[in-house]
Structure formats: C-alpha cells, structure tokens
Length: 131
Image (cartoon, rainbow, N blue to C red):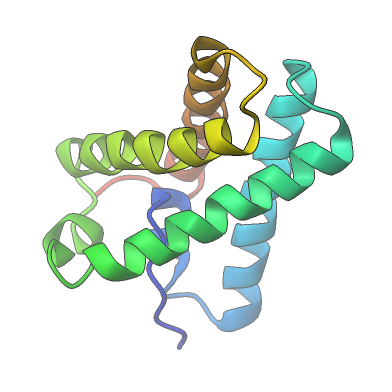
C-alpha cells in the first residue's frame, strides 16, 4: 500500500489505495479542477492543466508536512475535519493560483479556487463517503 497524504481530502483518503488507483484519483482531481477553470474562462486549457497540477503538488507538499502535526484530521474524515482541510486547501491552492495568475483579480482567483475545490470535495464525498 502506498501511504501519501494530500491536503485535498479526495486524495488523502485515497492514499490507502494501491498506487495506480491513487494515481487515478490524483489525475481525476487535476482534470476536474482544470475543467472548472476552463468552464469559468479562467485560463486556456494548457495553462489550466498546468496550474491545476502545480496547485495539487503544492497541496501534496503541505499535506505531507501537516500530517506530522495534525494526523487525526487526515485519518478521521468527519464533517468538521473535512471543513478544516477544505479551508487549508483554499489557502494553499488559492494563494498559489493567485501567484501563478497575478494579472487576474484576487476575487476571481478566490472564486475559481472555491468552486474547483468544492467540486472535487463533493466528488470525494460521493465516491468515498464520510466516517
């Protein structure tokens, strides 16, 4: 079993899957976030794909650090813990997405970040459920 922890709850819970399943979850997360950026006319498809990949790698890095300090939040996916992780994800991904797209207004980036993560978190809940 592969044990990685991502900040996105979708990927954190899927980290207990075998490596190729984990890879599929990551790919789906990146593609869904890219599609949200496209639908919201935030960037063209190549830029959206690259940005979605970069912000999710950043979430991975932050998640790997945070798991050492707040592992109970990652390992016990209650509604409250998902809210905590969602807020942390918004800060990490939103901040980085803004840095990658400085010409766009912060409010626009914040809205895109909120919607793309709301969609991926909703997919997670539908697929994996809550504990």
